[in-house]
Image (cartoon, rainbow, N blue to C red; front, side):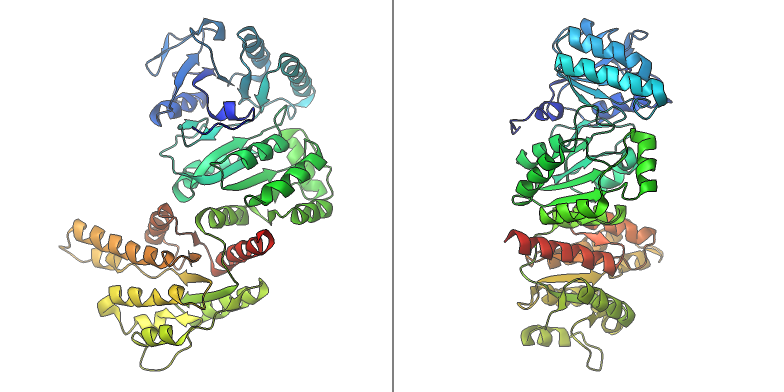
Length: 478
């Protein structure tokens, strides 16, 4: 455990967690809160709180926070909004200083909800109770298996990427996130009764386990000047990716319907400010996760010379266009690499960049392993700063359609295919893949490759834009 001198550290490293509103009913969302902590092996104690149960999931249950026999570090309130005030008072009685309010229906819940939001906000501030939410699911810390989520989480994958969200849109994607990205921590600020984007940015910028920060913001609740000053200093140490929604009048009103706060920032001014601060702005949700993946898995390139490996000439043309439109240029492949590649040429000469591996493959299927090993010369070329490749077929799937082929043989060939692809990244330069078929078999390969930190994108355009962002960041931070 690496201590950070910041109050949010206590939210991510509690020794004891009380779940108020825990239940034995598997058909209620609150059931997952308890189940996840137990199934994932949270490295702390969990105390379920429910006055109508003696035990939940085999754990002794308490009627009130006051009945728990030891000091509670973090309380998670998952009771209806009108009952939350009672939980907050109990927190004050036991001296508890960290509270997560999962429940919605406060500032976004009409006049009564707004009134309750204000009353609880005043009380917690007066009592010094730092509050995350309401209308939130988090924190998540993969280092101690702390996960506050309504979704049954299958497994955690630890990495250096930390997310700060102002919406629960990520929540249904958590299993995808943990399968495809390396996660350090996740903080959902919800309706920002207390904890806001300034606190999140300040904490993650100090946190040594956070290597990349990715933030979703609908509106600024903290002091704008403080936020941009922090952003400027944070980007000098680590990349910060920002997805700002509520960009239009209609979008701001839509944001208000679930957070109770209308974004008042001028989007052009906001865009200019984050760019001047050195942050990377994502234009949409897909790009947000693409950029997060690229910065988590890849080191910035030393230059803008890119090599492209395709399975069709048409893909090569589109990728070339995208490179030029995004500040990247085609690398000039060196003579030594050219000699190696000629071994897998078709019976005629072809361009070296983009390199049409598809037409070459037609003549070298009998020794596909050697074919992939030869392709590895491209990312290793001294004139290449980064490489993107269209996903080659995994012929073990074709073999599996044949009869009497042992499953172990198919598994072994698939593993060898993965090793050969992963070896291309080991050349020490940014290396990314984009999808070819996007069928079920390929999606399985995507998950396997990304579990080994090889980023895979849905198109060459998305891969190139991510590499371009890496290159621009490397220029600004050098």
